[in-house]
Amino acid sequence: MSPYALVIHGGAVTMKPGELSPEEEATQREGLTEALQAGWEILHRGGSALDAVEAVVRCLEDNEHFNAGRGSGLTQQGEVNMDAAIMDGRTLKAGAVSAVPYVQNPITLARAVMEASPHVCLSELGALELALEKGLPVKPPSYFITEKTRQQWLDIVQKEGKMAMHDTVGAVALDQAGNVAVATSTGGIEGQLKGRVGDSPVLGGGTYASNDSCAVSCTGDGEVIMRGALAHEVYALVKYKGLPLAKACQAALQLRDDELKGDKGMIAIDPQGNIALEFNSNFMRRAYRIGDGEPVVAMWKDE
Image (cartoon, rainbow, N blue to C red):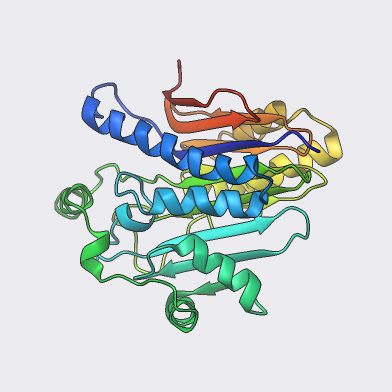
């Protein structure tokens, strides 16, 4: 029986202290704790890493305080276009969706793409049609738009050049059978162009898992993460260079740093139960639990 472990993130970003209200910070910590518990219970009772990461991400998608599912950022047109991906490290099977509207849990739709279609990634209306065909819950636009995201959208539309949020949620897990899995989901960048696809549904970009190396979920500036293929970079450094997991993540964060400037963060796990939580910003919502150990929840860099 393998050691089992779970690591989750709710987005990495550079933020001034005080920019996040104490109430919002407490609510987000609570959300991380709840999502961690949902995934950990599955692993604890011998469930699969794949089920655990999906459960974590569903929980965060349903929480309006995270930029995925319900709390997704709005496009330039004030609409919600969501991305998600899930990957099984045992089989290398994967499913992804991009720029999908209306679907309550894009991560569950990504899993349906993996299990019920011959493809790896479906986008926009094609993804939505599969959700309808599979009877997955869909919601009206009003469900996804929160007061916070509406206000941020207005600020961006009215003031060109204002910083857009680019958070993501994700989870990596190792189950008792020794398999790793990853799930990542995002509402994208506030004010993004219609049809923009981020790094989250790009295998090897923001999401990757393989039992012969590790599982990785990235967060931060999606364009930068995609251009560096950072999830695959971590995988390759572990597999081919034999780097310890945390060192591989640190090296991936520094890859071509002059050209790949921006917020970057990642969580990773390997089949031996080693975990890594690395980021170059001053803030990454994160949590982990190893076996029966105490859960750990943190947000600021110095925690």
